[in-house]
Image 1: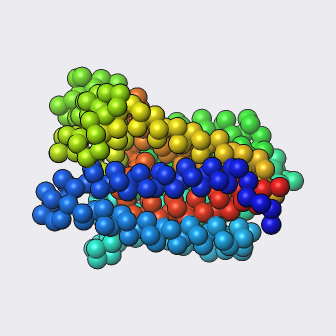
Image 2: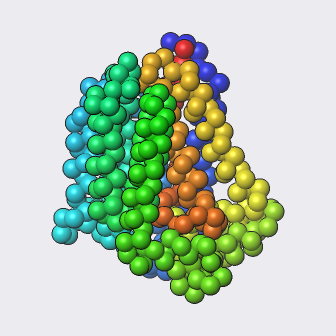
Image 3: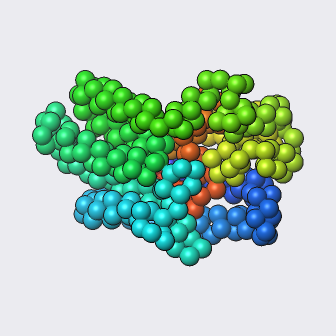
Length: 364
């Protein structure tokens, strides 16, 4: 094996810092909610820290195990991921949160099957595109199978009412097709069709339509659909340049809904100011840069597409989350990767981060 590359060290540093900072922010932003629910202020932090510990094991495993070994498992992993997506519809297991029936509860443990499916779909498509590199322009053999997998994944997310996850799947698939060298006209056509279908899904119900267009007129919608984002912007503004101090933010006192999960960025900006907000954005930009370096330097097509796909997943999801929280884009209900409260999201992100480090460690 080669000596670790600069990309490897930089990705390791950024991911570790985001996870640790995320744990601190989960403690800060969830304590009030936890007390209001009649528990200890440490409840959600304990859960998140436990998931982070398991995520650490997953990360070390996916990092140590040669990433080629996953190629043998892509079909069963994909089948498992798809099967999990039907669990939320099982009476007694599925939970509806914010209009999306996308969670499953086993006793005290809640998890979101789409998080597992993200990695499963990514591995499956990377394997297919890596194996059929020479047939990348062959529609029947390469392009259509990937589109079918994409359709299944996005369709299941829409069935659960989770449009945000469908958008992330679309970004992952389009990026892996681009990295694998699929013809640009086909990628553009797929993006246009999926974009049209996405807009159709938004326009289908009035609630979703109002929620998605609220950001265009926050002043007018702050009493109802734009309430979350309006409160979030007030929190961000309250932070100023240097913030009000760790743990001192007021947004999490019940003003900003979901302050510990989807809207954690607002609390970061309030407590650490513009400096803290730019630090987080900078972290994802550094991750994007070195993730792309790892993809370019990968030893084989499978590694290249895998590194590029994981980097896109993290960065696009962060971009959509921060865009929603700051009122620049519609709110999609996506978490901020590696930072937001959410066990299954953190666990699967850490497992994926291990794979990214694996590719970065073995660059040519």
